[in-house]
Length: 474
Image (cartoon, rainbow, N blue to C red; front, side, top):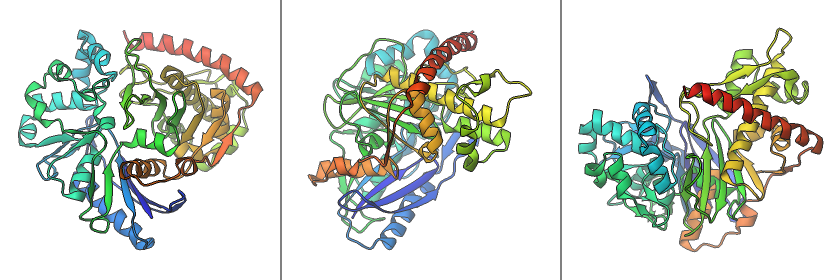
């Protein structure tokens, strides 16, 4: 069997697949996030322990030889480790907001835009650049004690394999220090962020991704690869490799990814270019803050359960009787396809006659418009795959197809873990039929009439958004 490990932000998963890509079993374990005053941290030992635990349970359930394993996980954040990969302090999550004042300063003085023009990465508070700069100012002893500032999967890989030093891969390194043309660190960016004396902490970039053999978790000597991180792993697992094809991950946050061979560093700074193992091939990524978290808030506020969503979406027409939602509920604002830390959600057209169904449909439509905005900004021209927790609602998938105006290739299961296995197979020269492994579960066709309605609605959404951004930027 083939094992994919996905070290998520709130859940660690391990999935087993057969040689034809059929998912045999999944084991998962939740991990805690510590949230306090804008700080979001994780206990590295807890995360690593969860990985070992799910691997043990998975191999116990499916007692077949493990041909190879692929590792992926959450990106961004800062995971400070010593020479053995042990934690120096708690990990700073990609959700962390402590560095927002530094980012505000860099937005004002032009540093933010300069970095984007060099690397194609639009920094946000939870990306490594701002977090490392914050640590250098307010917790320098942690940086002094660390051997490397790595990413989640890199810590796990080093400890699973006992590697002598930490490494990362080009996908994780893409934000914000990697020059996408040379595929090496841009020392000028390091200098611009005031981190020259911390340059030693940036781990070597494995290009292609680093491989090794496990010492624990899986049978000793199991071949394993380190990366790519979860967004590009999902693209691989969904079969998104040809230029122009895209993936929409409908999770807590939306992530729009489009495969490309182009590199355009002009235009409004937003999102990032994710380098891949294929030289010259990248993913133009627009990882928005908006996502199912917005719908969860509305469901909680109205007292509606997830099980009722499909029925309620069917009970109110497109346009939700005039209710409109700008679904930017994140307390850190938005980061794609534009950066506006102070943008907040807006509900309009609400009256005493408004029903919970109207609010839910309007929220789903608003999220759909945000997704369309991201995909257009990322350059989508080909087919579109969709994965994530949101795919469990068939009514919402139909609504998304109508709002986006194109068929959706729905890919279910552990898509990131699947992509991690495909990446590992590529490195080890193991022949797996990627087309079979990434076959969609279903294809949702848009309704032409509703597409025309939502095309007009999208333009109205952009107009309302422009006004809201103007207020937020004052």
